[in-house]
Amino acid sequence: MIGIFGGTFDPVHIGHLRLATEVAETLGLSRVHLVPAAIPPHRGEPLLDRATRLDLVARSIADEPGFVLDDREHRRAGPSFTADTLDEFAAEFPGEPLVLMMGMDAFNGLPDWHEVERILAIAHIAVATRPGSEATGAAAKWLAERRVEPGELAGAPAGRIVPVTITRLDISATTLRALVEQGRSLRYLVPDPVSAYFASG
Image (cartoon, rainbow, N blue to C red; front, side, top):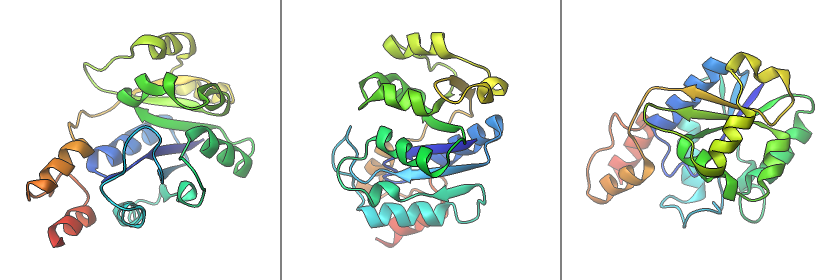
């Protein structure tokens, strides 16, 4: 099974990489593709430009053989819709189960995503959960209907949802951008290449 972890990564931080690591270990994924969004459809213009975000992700995962920087959304015109990205993965890796990785906040917003039924037809969903986080609304209904345990994920080609409890790390890109604006250090909150990038600026 291949993990797919998308996001703006503005900037990539320890919380992102720890989520990817713990979900991959729990589900026994062969590798994880980190897919920075070129034009995120659900938020404004990123702080960092495309090339910088790609470069910082690449350098941050350089020593992790199970992680792959995937720039396909930067090579594709238009908004970075996950359904389109999954179509490309399915064509590139026929017969390989795909697992879309996300946090609970993103999962709760999933019902509003572009062509969400196509997403569920192509991939499984791994939802990283922490104490106190819970599914709400339509997402909670999907979870109740489609939930499986980690060991059961390979029993269907797509459409299953598996919660994965991960270490609680209260780090957000929004908070990091605020620290940058205040001229404060990001050390120990982000990978060393990201900390060095902002320190040098």
